[in-house]
Image (cartoon, rainbow, N blue to C red; front, side):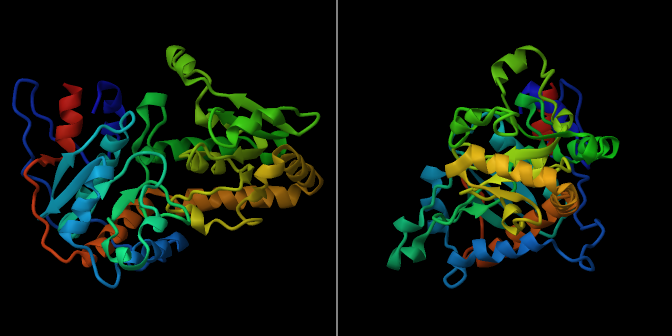
Amino acid sequence: MSQSSVKAANRTEFPLSCVPPNATQTCPMNYPTMHGAESSSSEACPDYFRWIHEDLQTWKTNGITREMVEAGKKQAFFRLVIVNGRAYVEKYKNAFQTRDNFTIWGILQLLRLYPGKLPDLDFIFECDDRPVIQKSEYMGQKLTAVPPIFHYCGDDSSLDIVFPDWSFWGWPEINIKPWEPLMQDLEEVNRRMNWTDREPYAYWKGNLHMGWRICLLRCNSTEEWNAQIYPQKWALETRHGFRTSNLADQCTHQYKIYIEEKAWSVSEKYIQACDSMLLLVKARYYEFFTRSLVPMKHFWPINPRNLCSSIKFAVDWGNNNPQKAQDIGKAGSRFIMEELKMKNVYDYMFHLLSEYGKLLRYKPTVPPGAVEVYSETMACLAQG
């Protein structure tokens, strides 16, 4: 990890065993080998866990072979192998910023949370924005040779296996905290700021240069469209110390807009956690949890073909039905705060990888080019 990533990386549930600067960092021998976390077997899993079986359905009949995994290497950013509870990574190319590092970091935390519980695994990961395994390329007999590639999002035309994105463990390049402390910040803001005291307009702030977002700036009028749209210039924000990009300072409106970039955006959980009624511009892509969001219960759907007028109609309706609008906002926020706790995120990862492991038709072995990784190799060495 880079020096800028260290603070985020050190926000972990488990203490690190860093050695002095002049010593060689090795894998600590005191890692627990038995699962000691409180069992969740008596708790009901969130509804979105059911999508695990849907995402793995392609390989249910014939399973996954080593050849299928290796066939996806040309599209993958890294390969991660787990043998006897130890993780090994073979990197193929660099991801944007530190997406790959924080994804690997999250999996290492999972191994420490559930020591000895995950099976031996061998999987590849894609770290770009859009899904890469298109259904149209694997029709008929080719369906038995689909490379199983893990990715952050999916859509109806792809077969990527959807996995939690890196931002759950932080996004240091734009000063976003890991999800757990950030969720606490958002909860505190919601307690302090009543819904009725917020601005009665739709709010959005972010990068305006991709997808439907290019059209969003046209809606920037409180008088004509009931909306306040703010472009986020990250280069400028970085130079000025992120003074105006704190996500907890953006829960100031009764309505907030979510709109995709060229693919999905990690911002949906942040936007929906504000108690504001979510105006969700029809999305093509989904994250692991978003397929269980229900329109008119958790969000108000917005038509991208009539973007500004659709936003205006939703805000007018909400202002004429404030209790119903507030109920939708609260229900959406409650879904995020309760169903998307980090414990559930880790449990989703655990069940997904466990089910994936059952499909392997071979015993994973460490690839010749792989390097063993553990929390200390990522955080301690970066700390220097």
